[in-house]
Image 1 (cartoon, one colour):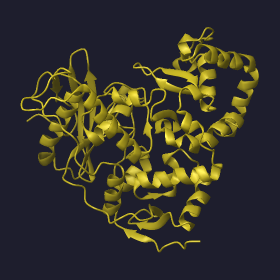
Image 2 (cartoon, rainbow, N blue to C red):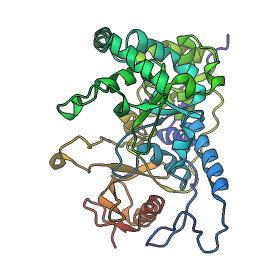
Image 3 (cartoon, one colour):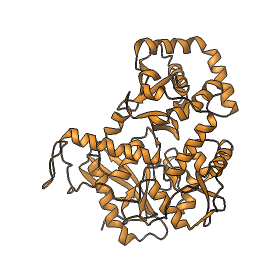
Image 4 (cartoon, rainbow, N blue to C red):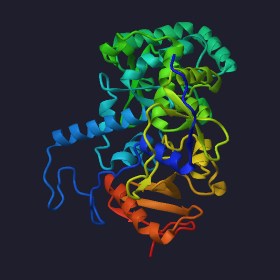
Length: 432
């Protein structure tokens, strides 16, 4: 049995460098230069550019998006579309301009991605399906929440046993179906959190059980079908590992995607409970797959994937806008430890009580989070609106403002909007 190596010593800066490299945020993205004004039509080329066929562009985009997925391991889904849905923003932060329709093509039936509960609702590479079957089995037995949730789910199954069977039979006979299209959806009324139909609850339960798989329409509605009609047969034919073995692999993948991480960081990445992760991490250390590390100021042990090279400074000082649900920052305690960045999503905070805004994107420059911007895609007007811009302590506003405006214009161009409105409130004026 391999013996654990001595703990590595890392500065906080080195921890940031390792993290950014692991997350695919240490290099330069593909840019599309565009003068202020209307974005080019889908078939247009810029002056001096070489025309590329839609097929070649689509193949290149799919390849680059798959590289992003292979690096981060899971891309969180979210329905909020005030700017662009997070599953589109996360690749844009890493590769720059690509066809926003490409991720949907990758997650259609038979594609290389599938949707399940990874880090919350997530897109995942289909190769991870066997590693998540223990979670599907747990859903069938006890539910995916705590003991109280498990008790409620068992009671729901018992109360709706016949209806659950009828929904499964309908999907089996009809093929792909959304909750709204069920022959007996059993809609409910009430406040928004009580409006989910009984039919949707049944479909969601069968989805969590792994009996059904799902993908999204352009309006973000889930479409459900039998798992064997959605997932590649070669993936379904793979053996199911024991839960402990699957959890070790998920934690090893999390370590690779995070660069350096504490046990809670590793557990959070694929939504494992720390108590479940702790013995699996110890086994990975004992097997020589993870190496213990001490990071300056963290106050708790950290772990590196075995064989990780020396931490390297990010190349250049590219300005990167990050989705609120980006895997770099979704664990708020980690963002604070790495970047001294205190971040809270204020979508559900009443407008009068919001500090920074409704849909706020952190701004990464080099290896620091230096600002945050509240953005809205005003599609009827064709304008990307910067509602607010705030600088972090130590931000060099004079050096940051022009590259930040350029990054906002890049985003504007990718979204297909004609204009950029920089009349932002906050302490970081973007207009000269």
